[in-house]
Length: 461
Image 1 (tube, rainbow, N blue to C red):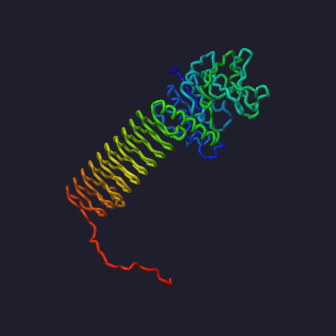
Image 2: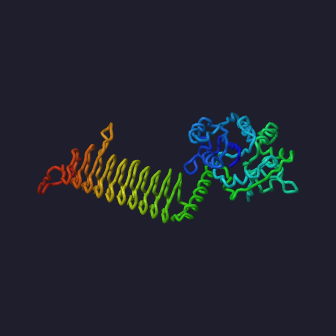
Image 3: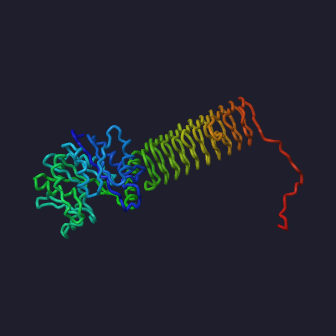
């Protein structure tokens, strides 16, 4: 959107209050590291260069981010010692152009593109852009000091503020936009003569005022947009804020949520009209729900496509699978990667499938495992049936033809095929191919003993 835009993301801090060896910005919000939320938003602004300032856990950050942004690679700048925000930005100076520079924070994940655009539009050689927020409780934030004309002329950090300044409710978010030329001019002049003994980036505001460069301020739509994370409680608060935003978008698109406060989307959820989602459901990766799909409570769906008018009953887990439509799944079903259900196929309670094609109208109703298999149309698989697909070294396929009937408690020892319209008797172990329309039974002969006495407990034991 801009001829030359550099984006600098500060991500060098340890995050001591998180009580974790993981760098703070790599802790996840909605299943994605916080810093990636910031990077993804930054990418929508089409910057020429994106710089991430790293320090604590630098190698972990490089590994986590280097392969994620191939088209516009992230440039890393190392802040070996954490000496403040001004010192952090200074590490990027050799890589910056002279155009606009937007400074963001890796632990402020909910910042919106629209807010950043409004801020950048205020920036030119005579104007520095500063994002501020007005808070009921400004404790802990730097305060915005304005002159009699209402112009922002300085930012005073909480520990350096006097009583009058502490009463100010307009606060610094840390997010600012200015030119690379201004940064190159002002950052070398920063001093660490303050209560923290650090180089404050905020001191450039006073330098701008001294040069006659106006400070143009903007504010976010809501304070949560600029809230940072320092501990687990704040992390949980932002997680709920993020999920609430997603829930509101889904409901605006026509999705019915039993309780918007009990929804977790950790990826992308795309829904058709009249989708219903019950409480406690988790969606990960890219999930697509067709029109009229109904999801029961406490389901987990990962990277799956569920066709129109399908019903997924409670406590089912689906991962990397496709249901064509009008399917009945669960309750307590587990569809593992590679499962593909044709229209009107049914997978019932306590059934597990893996790398299985289940044909139109086929049913696996209860307590069965079907893996590395292909089921034709209108197949019925009885309760307790398993495909024995693994010989300890290799996986093998099971083929079941259209209209076949597999009796309860059967074991199909792969590689094996059951023909069209064939029947497998209950309790059979099938290790040889069954021809079309044949009956295969492997049970032994039933024996009865009349008046057989049951074993009795011995009194001497």
